[in-house]
Length: 178
Image 1 (cartoon, rainbow, N blue to C red):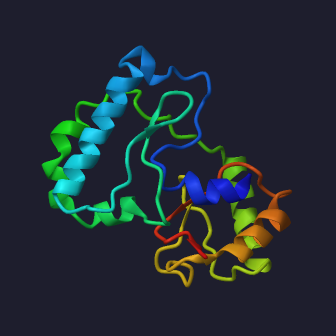
Image 2: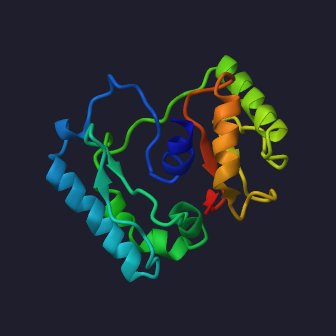
């Protein structure tokens, strides 16, 4: 459901993609891929990103790093280029299909996502931004950057389902306040 997408897909390190895409098991076994992901996580933690979540695999076998307690590890990591560089050698060893391919949005999809943003603003989230060209809603610099109240997400999810019921990618914020 939309709520799950709002909470999970954004920070999980994977996006919706073509289910016909080859899974990583063709290039690397599931256990090897998971071990490589965890090696990267440990490197990040050792270099100072101590809240980095553990690596995990999706049911399809793609690598992901699910959020824990609303922690936005991607935003935290973006502000620490030295950590990225220190762990790059591990990241470079990922097979090309380790992560679910990003969904490409059509012009019609982007129009519907803009309508979703309008619906969200009308239904209790006046600071909700329009989508960017990648179909993401960047909460950074908006009143929602410090988190979105869970009850408001539930209301928007229900009210705007008829406008857009696909993935909703949110970046630049703490996602949901309890």
